[in-house]
Image (tube, rainbow, N blue to C red; front, side, top):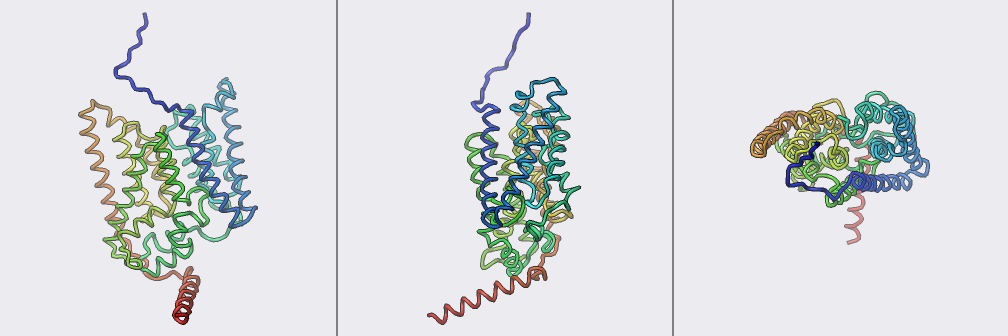
Length: 391
């Protein structure tokens, strides 16, 4: 006789996998649509259609790879495709790419994301690494030069990294940088070229809040990830002695700059919260998020890469099984271990912040931005003089 045994009490979540993935897909498409509308309006139909072409190439590649896999495994293709949710990986991957990337680079990256990031492990639910991050890493490592000429110039993230080493140290230096993105408002709203879906910080946060309310993602991961980056930014600003910006202390504007620039908000909402590759224990997720934030800032301020979010996700994906194993204990012992691990992660983040503060701030306006900054400053002075004459 076969017995079925379940430890009480038993809780059943109202959210099914289909429902979670459906709402996540809608959230991603909202951000993608808003970004594509910006490119249509700002740069014309050709650039807007480029984003749609990249998404179509990635989706078609995903469905072809998964259909072949289902055929080899002798599974029903339609059923496999509907339960594999490969389109979520495709959308995230395309949104992580700049608008200037070529379609063939996206196709190859999608093959790596789906085949080597998911299918070789057995498909959805068995993968170790975030498949979209795997695909983006392939593009970054092998196809960084595979770009079109539809938009020229470095992205704001690349400028902040290469020209300022992530530390604009004076009011003039920060103004020169903000001038390239339309000020703080443009930086927050995403009205500048960059990765297709990563720039619109305010919209991503709003979508993230909705997904948290709908219990699609765990609030702990984005809150502790972004919160740790903010606190680390405050420590770096305090220790490096960078100047205030128009009366706003550096311990306020600099951490905000760290959070709003690059893909950390997108990564916090849509990638770190991947239920397959993050720890299942809530306290483990806090440890996971804090460590990912520390690695992100470390790569930014001390590495040779302009952005650290993607690699921090892949690194912490590697440690997820170890985190699960460390917290596999009775509840009281688990909580003691969890608090110890979280405290160690916080100390690690502070050490990284202290290490990052050894960098020297860029106090001069870089030559690459000086001409535009001087013209902008001169225009402001002219307007001020005309206002005084009018009075």
